[in-house]
Image (cartoon, rainbow, N blue to C red):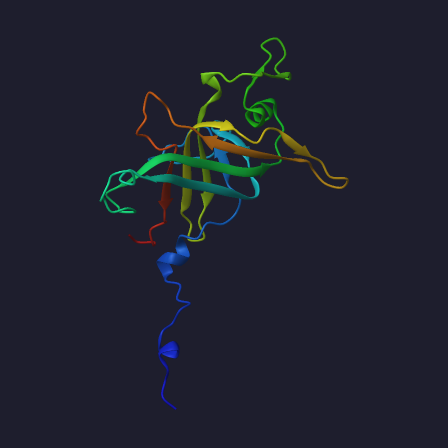
Length: 198
């Protein structure tokens, strides 16, 4: 019986390089991250994440030629990015004052009582943070998501369990900056570990 095209064509191929770049685990949210000397310790960890993260980035597109007579529509030349949506959603087991402040978004820590987190009903420019999510890859490297002007857009949602620890769900949204309008609110680094001996 002759071999069919379907049998000849392997559709489930996973190359060694592709295998190495598969993210795994939960990772950490960091305040700073230096790619030239990467480290994760008490100086830059904002909070741990558990159960994985959901990172989303998308563009809103508009056809700028749509209103011009006799112009073709839906062309790559006429497409223009009119906005972006960039979010990191995760669950953290941490409930320190700093993490509670991050989850609320518009809040301050009382200068006279560092255990007291005081929500505000209006945003301030100081509320927007540059943050990094860093998670491991199966091959030993790591994935980095850098979010600019991040602010909690999901509010504080704290849940405890009868038998087990509590956790908070946090959604951070990256916002554009009028002082740097061409900068997207999110960037990525996919660092695959080089084989031994390279």
